[in-house]
Length: 95
Image 1 (cartoon, rainbow, N blue to C red):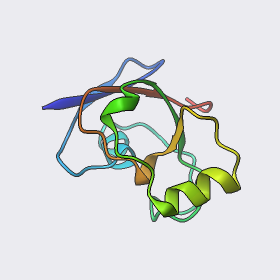
Image 2 (cartoon, rainbow, N blue to C red; image 1 turned 180 degrees about the horizontal axis):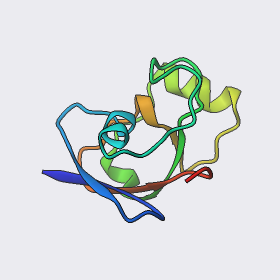
Image 3 (cartoon, rainbow, N blue to C red; image 1 turned 90 degrees about the vertical axis):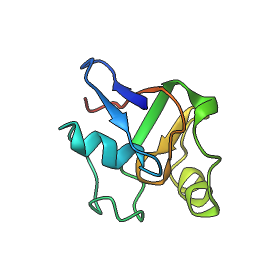
Image 4 (cartoon, rainbow, N blue to C red; image 1 turned 180 degrees about the vertical axis):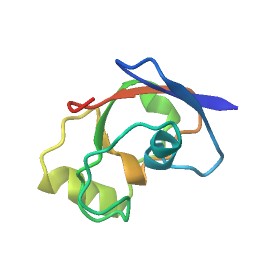
């Protein structure tokens, strides 16, 4: 099983097949600033992928729209639309 590690807390959690970063983080007790409770519509669950960028799905059209709308950096993703398939480390500005 693969892990999502949350920086700087150092917490980590196993990622279930087909699970988003958002859902894994909620299970780990990490608090997200979000406006939609993970319903994939606001982009507030922005995370920066520190390691493992090559282990996540390519952005969907919905995610691309959000990334463009909110001017994400190249290494940032929408947590509720991102599915890791390997070990990953993430952070966000509000942890």
